[in-house]
Length: 169
Image (cartoon, rainbow, N blue to C red):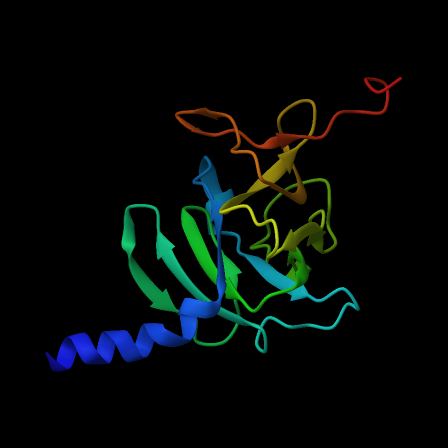
């Protein structure tokens, strides 16, 4: 009975929040070890990750075992981050600073960034996905891509492909 009461008291603050899963599927090779760091801002670009959100993570092979982040919120290959938001509109993006890229060989030698995903608690998706970006030759190019669509899969998750400007003409 005490355990049930403790669980209910622990989960009560989350009952009024909106939940989102950010999943970074497992990719091939060393790209999985490179962390992308989560950035959540409000519409005025104020960082609200620590003030308006509760954040936990799980691994793809243990989806029902949740862990708390100690300090920095990051996502590695095979992780699912669970975020609970207060009502509102948020901008979600990820980045990997140069010093956290583990000397990974790719085109971009600066900070790897992603597109910005707008999350609105009035019309929320349940899951969004983060994928590394690759060029036409399927070499990772040092970027991240956030989408509400699951990435393609064959043995491992395929990276988002950045098409050259010639293809767009």
